[in-house]
Image (cartoon, rainbow, N blue to C red; front, side, top):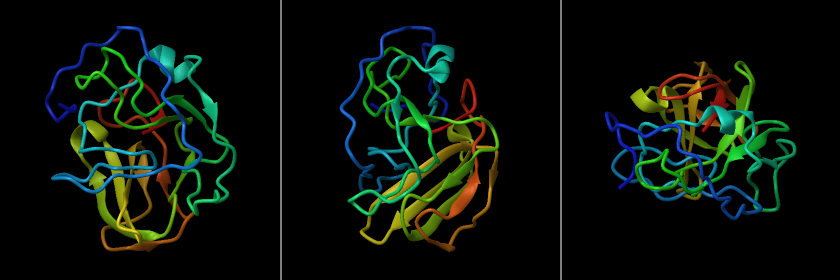
Amino acid sequence: SLIHPGMKLTLGAKGSAPAEKSAAPEAAPKKAEPAPKAAPKEEAPKGDTISADESEGSGNSAQTGSSEATGSGWSAPLANANVTTQYRASGASWSSGYHTGSDFQAASGTPVLAIGPGTVVSAGNSGSYGNEVVIKHEDGMYSQYAHQSSLNVSVGQTVTGGQQIGLSGSTGNSTGPHLH
């Protein structure tokens, strides 16, 4: 029921309802394909996009603040970035009926930071997500960082929270520069 590689999307439909924003990003357990990221994920959605309106900020934006750790020990994946599409925002743009991650507004080339310590389990081009990194964290959770223009890490590498892992971009199925 999620967006998978090769699936078609209906773009241009408006209507994204804001989802509750938690104080700290979470991640869901890994499914068949790596896909979680700073926000909860279910399974690797493919064909992820944002509309031009969303990339400009659709009124759904929330300031993430800095990359400093929150009370949960997680840190933001970008310094001072706005969330332009929140996790589970509804709309016809996604085959599941809702957005499966959080999109952060970011100009191409903005440093992307690991949200916490862990090991890189995937780094490279993954089709719809373009250049992405997936990190397995010490608590068993996973985080995903998609649509990057370049990657600074490789599979098996250990990273620390706040470490730069790449640069934001618009690779894969993306309508503009952002971090998913």
